[in-house]
Structure formats: C-alpha cells, structure tokens
Length: 58
Image (cartoon, rainbow, N blue to C red; front, side, top):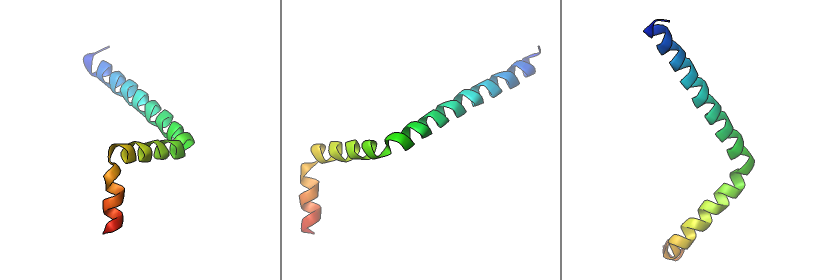
C-alpha cells in the first residue's frame, strides 16, 4: 500500500467511526430527550434561582 492508499483507508475508517458515534448519539437523544430536557431545566433552575423571579416581574 502506498501512503495515499493508507490515507484514504484512514479517512474512510475515521468517517465510519464518526458516523456511528453520531447515529448512536441520535438514537440515545431521541429515546431520552424528555429526561435530558428536564434534567437541564432542573440544573439551570437550581444554579440560578433568582432568574425565574426577575423574569416574571418584568
């Protein structure tokens, strides 16, 4: 194999790995999206409790 053939093989392999991680992430997000949104909202509300009150008063 020449170096260009190795480079093409490495590109194909890295693209396949990246695509598989993306698909797994997409499936996980679609399954747990509501739980993820709830956890994010809870974390933000706990970290910034005064934001809810100041926004509601305006």
